[in-house]
Image (cartoon, rainbow, N blue to C red; front, side):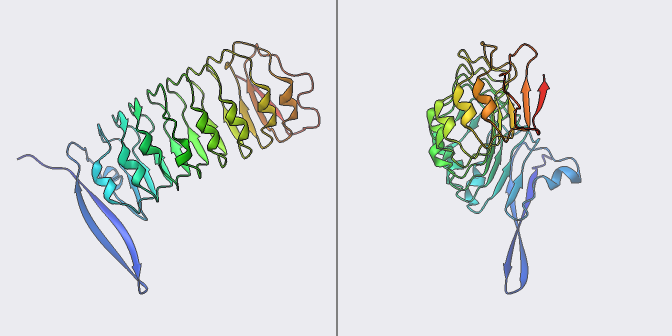
Length: 259
């Protein structure tokens, strides 16, 4: 007899000082559930769903019915497209598709007004849609270990961004609009193929606490403007990169890490 694997999804609703638990049975054909720990990954508690490590080849469209979803984790599956219906999840605050096979992100999927964290690292993305204006509350954007050659200028619309991870891609340049991210604290751009020198405007990102520029540019000389980063606590560089003469003056917290 063929067995159909199912996830049990629990959603708690408080009403008149009582908590009612509704059990919704959603079939996800082809999902593998072999232990109690794995069954837990399919549960929803407080509007969270984790469907990691289930060999999913696409984002289950059944998820579109949950308009109150706040956290969706699809780590380590085989998903190659971020579909448009994701953009209808207005309450979503965290979305992770780390370690999938993403090659395409639908522009409508980025219409997520409440999203705080987007994790797309370890995929196969070569480009992103020019649709960042739909995620104005975003605070963390992780695009490490993809095949990105460029970023759309609209990324500069992310004025609330605090962490931007771009390392281990094939970026040839950085959009100048990034200089408008005045809340940015972590910027990781190491191991890219940036053709021009590191831009001077990075020195204007006054909130930076950590900066990784190791192996990111063809020009080994780092801009003098890095000396203006008075809040910088960790700078990661390559052994051959030339540091600014005044780097660290007046900043006793600064550590330099060679990588």
